[in-house]
Structure formats: C-alpha cells, structure tokens
Length: 143
Image (cartoon, rainbow, N blue to C red; front, side, top):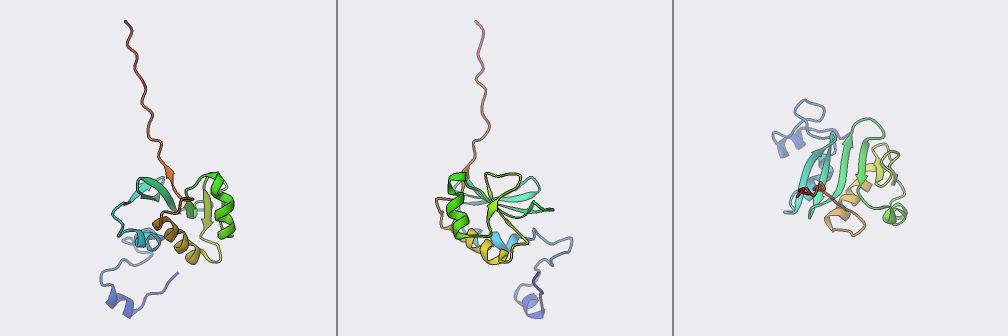
C-alpha cells in the first residue's frame, strides 16, 4: 500500500484517502490510464469493475476475497499460452478458467497490472471478449 504525504496532498487536493468511506476501488489507479480514451467504459459487475474498450470486455478488477482479489484478463483460451509466457504471474482463474488471473498477492502485481492495462489500451488482439448480449426469443404466432 502506498503511503501518502503532505506533498501528495498538496498535488492532489481533495483526493480520496485509501481505507476511508469515501475511498474508491482499490485498483482504480490501474484503470486511470484508460480514462482518457473516448471508447473506454467502466461498469460495475458482480461486485467489481469491468473495463470495456470499443465495446469489448478487456479487464475485470475484483477486490473481494481470494480468488476474487486481483485483476482478471478477459481473453479466450487460445491466447492463454502466449499471455502466460509473457506474464508468468498469470494463470487461469480457479473458478472462471476462461480468463486469466493476476492475484493481488503476486510479487509484481503493480508492474504486471500496469503492463496488462497498457496492452488493453493498445488494443492487443489477445485481450477482450465480445459481449454476446441477451438472445431474443423468436415469437411464433399460431395461425
């Protein structure tokens, strides 16, 4: 956890204090570099935050108890070997195995998390899943 001092408080007046009732999500600092992108959307999903770019779900930030404490990389299984080779701290999520997981407890969580966010910002083809949306039922009229 980062310690804030007087210099930080002068540079960022009114910033939320981590741990306070007004504090934001603990991984907010990770998605901040995406906020300037006009195609960025952040949504609440299952108690975490889902980051979308160009309508694709790219990253999911979970701040609950393990195994829901860290960064989930939304990808397909075909990209797992490539991403795990580049980022050894990634592994398939123990419950949601189609996505990769970077636990907060990982030794290089901050650096790896920032690199993964950069990949999303650059629209790396290995990241992102399209929402299938709700399937509409075809209503058949009886004649």
